[in-house]
Image (cartoon, rainbow, N blue to C red):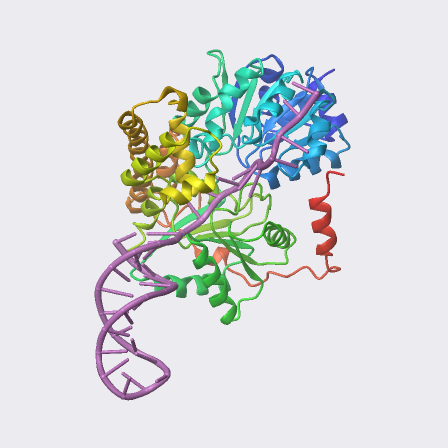
Length: 496
DNA sequence: CGTTACGGCTGTATAGCCGTAACGGTGCAATACT
């Protein structure tokens, strides 16, 4: 059967988008493929269509529960029922029942963490996985080395599953990150690479410098009430997202809400849905908001604080203008913004003293049955700091009675290496902010594209007209009120 | 590094000031398999 026929039959599309067909052909031939496709470029089709050609379930590693549930729902909506999400929301008993019949499914979604559980991996070993997909594969590079180290173990998982062909998908990766992904996933030497341009011509880029933070607040107020919405405002702390919402509301800006990782899951989904359905004009958020938010008409993204790497910045502004309409990304910069990002990533790792404490404690317990809480409270670490240390201490199994000094030195060495990498990325970000040249060229260079641009309304260096992005013609939908309670139930219990 | 929270001091005002310490962002999973 021709690919086009399958496309029509199962996805109701007449033709492929750029690169989709090439990627699918390679995947079906059994090649390892890494693909960087523009947001909204139809990444999921690249692994979903092969589901009708390959023999055995396709395993998709996904970073967020909400993303998994979204995808599962979309697949079900197009009439495909043989899909299952393996994660902690699956009740324990049911989990066991389903694990025995995994090969019944066409698509299996899983978190990197659940793949670390022996009985889950064993069940997958018997399921004859035909394709190993890593969605949002930049997470391997962005999180795998520290925040979520289980992302670094996917290569080993793949090997355990008999090294099925691998497809890694992302929207944002530098050449370095692509290499990192391929190495980490143990790509074969004959692997293929598909890269689309990082440039988004319809997103104007601007950086505005002010002296003090109060001026930034004033400017946000001004922009929020003049720019055409909907829009996002990114902050580096939860507190600021809430503070900005409070200020905006007090000044009469309607339909704003905050969003960050400290909120209840249900509240987070509610905000995201309300934003999606035009019931909110502005969301003030941390970097928790974004991945998997597929809204086509976001008109502006303001950075109240700038992120610690260009990749994150590009991901965040890339949420604007997916419909191709003119959109704007504005970064507000105050002179004392430069230290926050460094302080943030430094806090991911234990200090030297904490490391010494944790190694001593770890060596003193002669069982692996110590809870995370015990360790973190004993040694004054955060969970993230402990996970990092644990990841590297695993090369010194307890029964080996390793030398403590040696263990400390090994982990400390890893910490320093990570800090150097993160420092470099931050330096690239601040250099880009302060370099007097076309913003777009700066980004393009960072992603090794080496292009020049002739867009109108390109950036603050090339010149742009803010007027184009203004307008209070934003209308809230006056259609029948959406029943959120019902909507949420549907989202939570869609697995039934 | 900057902001914020909090304890202790001051010295009579029942609050204000100051210095120090802590915090600052992303998410998975969490019981016990045959």
